[in-house]
Length: 340
Picture 1 (cartoon, helix red, strand yellow):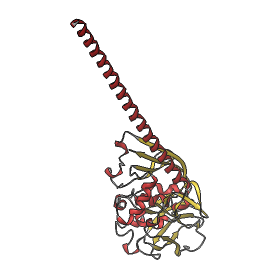
Picture 2: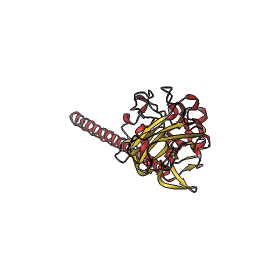
Picture 3: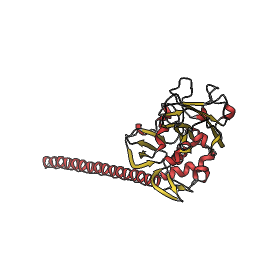
Picture 4: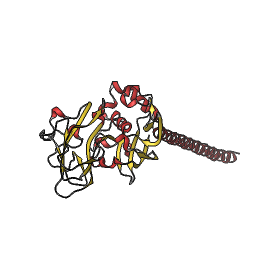
């Protein structure tokens, strides 16, 4: 009897051990399945949020449609251009993207003045700050990016997505329209026979409040018809013809002022609004400013020389070479990236 009792006890031990093993394995399997389900739900939520945000950005102008004039008024973020109060679908307005980029900059994102606007932007991305919006050219090279607390310099250009194992990327094909990039256009300027054909106050254009912080401004001059000899045109910003501070356009296909290929220009980025070094280029007293600005032109050439001058604005800290791309609409991609 004792031996049978011992066998029965040993059998019970193995049975209980096996039962515990099965229960334990089932519990682990259930926990793993639950974690996978939660991960899938979070992933789906992230993808849905990114898709919805991308659609809103490329299909609406935002609310109000002039939110870019005052961040405090922002109720819904949108980046499209408008035509008679209707959005132009999938046409990104450089002005609106430039203001989003400026709002998310490290110096602006956490300020009390922009707290309500920052909250509106985060709401579009599910209340998260882990988002990035980029504009890519047709070759998928980055033109601009915007994410919370970005800054210039290698460290400030990293959004944090590169350190995450769970990243969602959504893209939309868009155009970047020339209308919002070009602030002023002289139209074709023809050198007629006789005289220099000087114009004083030849072209006036407006700079609105806050735009000098959000954008860089450039002169882009294109030669439409060349002539023999050595034609040139002097461009004066907020100065009368004959002043010492000028930009000199000499017979060439295209030129951008200022440009960082010029060794005399010491700034890292920025356009004519930052071009004070060396002092002889632009007198600080006649610098680009908010309100009405004007350009005076003086051309010296043979008859028949035709040129055209644009004032082009780009989101701050852009590559100055990009200024010439916006004379026509640009095929591009808007990318929304989110992570957790």
